[in-house]
Image (tube, rainbow, N blue to C red; front, side):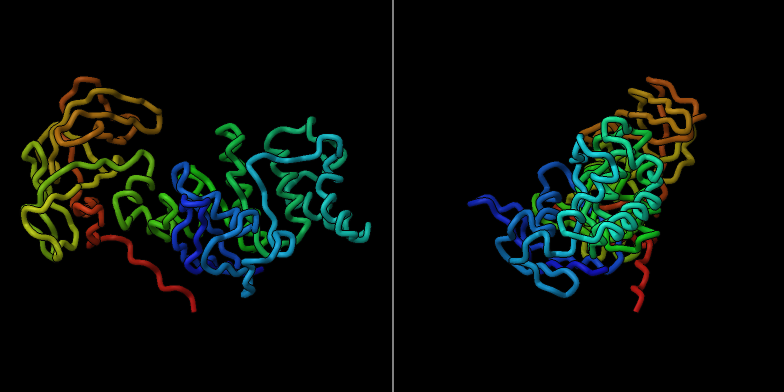
Length: 375
């Protein structure tokens, strides 16, 4: 196993800067996930670690060895791509063994390695079949098995589940988590799906336009987003954002006046704020409560414009002044909600997020405290 360190890593195609001063330490045995919207640079970053792209600045090391000029085959990594890239004329055994055969590994050792990997992935009964006889999930396991037999120091995964249907993606997430627990190898995983990131990662790297916006555990990113971008990207449904003006702010909290005159109390440290400054209030859909009276904490008066009844939950989209998009509420599935209904919504002050005009978050006073790293 090995750690991966990037110090001020950059990547440019001519005048187009794709990666900008990336500083990152992936710890030995860690499951790190890169997330971000299309074009943010996450796949380019992964390919740079693999050696499939040459970095144009900075230092990249794997296991303490600088690998800036080391070819991919000598970096001690194995990569699993979005496409399975299996040889259709070979059976599963030969697909998984092909790389070892090219390396002139003894036949008995190849068989032991392939059979061991197949057992880990629960495909030992399929080794004589060809790829066309397999399901999508089984083909993905073969691609992973081909990487396992190489016994790499670092596994790299580039959106490996994007070709699978929703139900199979859920199952394969579980398989990836078990695989990491069993192998205890450093894994770096790229996805655009933040649900995958939240369920798989030890830590998540959120990228935007070639820069790292924030690195942290899933819960840290959910509880303590550094800025508007991270707050809007992490969480499903997406966080609601409401424009407002700061009436009062200090270390104990802030009072925010919204566009329609509603005043919301936020449990944040607003000691660096000044009265009158423009701010953005963030409220997650799952933290909004609903009632017909006016006894809600931080009451917001809205009108339902659309309802999605999903069984376990109901998502209500509401008209509310000062929002660029409908105000989204995620409620219990048995909550009686109808289109056109007037609602009094409330949100606890402890679950209010607040951002300044530059998009920087004010620290939440009741946010999760980061755990001290193990010595």
